[in-house]
Length: 335
Image 1 (cartoon, rainbow, N blue to C red):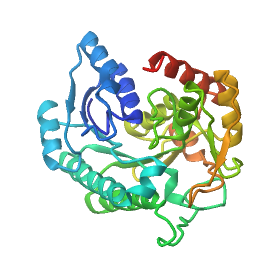
Image 2 (tube, rainbow, N blue to C red):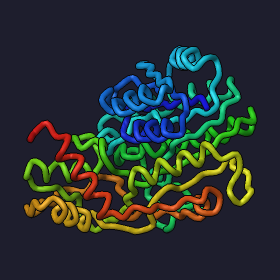
Image 3 (cartoon, rainbow, N blue to C red):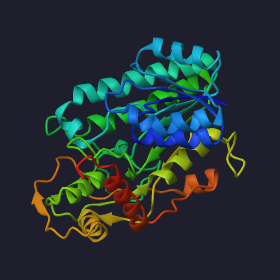
């Protein structure tokens, strides 16, 4: 198949591309490298050359229709699936640049959806559990309401609100244009290449502190929990959502939303202690103020993913942290 992956040079996108290549798909990445990195695609380029499969990269803004026109030409004039991952993620971004977060997340989706519709291509939208905001009823599924605090309090929900609106637009396209679209919601994915800078995500941020032998920071009490999910498990679920013509139970997948996450809750304090254990860096963490709008728990209901996709997270958190720590040590420029 011929596949377009927006945000393909990012953490999740680059891992998805590597896996798609193993299935001998021809891929065109669209990424302006705002958060994506060309080095994230080195394995893809090498593998594609060895396998004799074309692999294309369009380094342009995914909100610009011209980017998709170029991708279409490079793929020979037809596209089967569009995986839309382009977005700005990272809690610090949500608070500092809600204008940029909402604009990019909205505009890239609209352009990608219009392109997929024009080509009759299947569309897979990577949404987020952030769509539920500060919902406290668990596990999270389609019966849960989204709860956002007043916008005057903080801007944390710029990301979650943009993803919620994105899901609305996907369903609108299904109703008005009969596009075959599916939605996936990765829960706290982690692994090699996950950004660990100030605008990154918690697992890599903690392990980077271990690498520097500096105290890890715990926001609030550390009792808040997440369901951390290994990157390869997430990628497998995204691919299933894109490749299956119908569910393994015979159900229609168009318009369905699939939570992709471990169902094992881990507190931030437990995660910190696991990072200390795996890294061997036994420095006491420091406690800082909690992030405004940060939900206390986030547990996915994965029944839809299990029954329709045959998907379930498999890699344990300890195993995944060990693999991530090994990668960080081997790829660090600091040592």
